[in-house]
Image 1 (cartoon, rainbow, N blue to C red):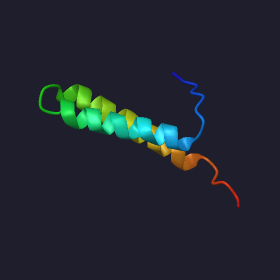
Image 2: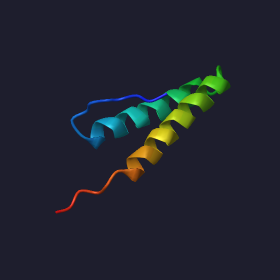
Image 3: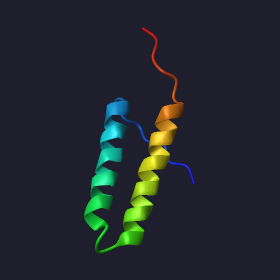
Image 4: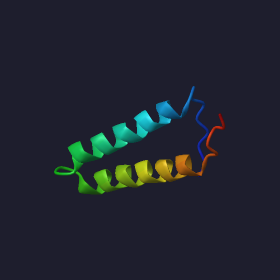
Length: 57
């Protein structure tokens, strides 16, 4: 499945990743499978960000 997000910049997406990781930390004790899934999503998004070309100055 693919998702298209229209954000103003990569900082917005980085904030979403941070939110997923924070949520996963909060869920770890009560729902470890959900926490693992959220961490995996965060890492996959982060990997996608790493593939983007770096802006030239």
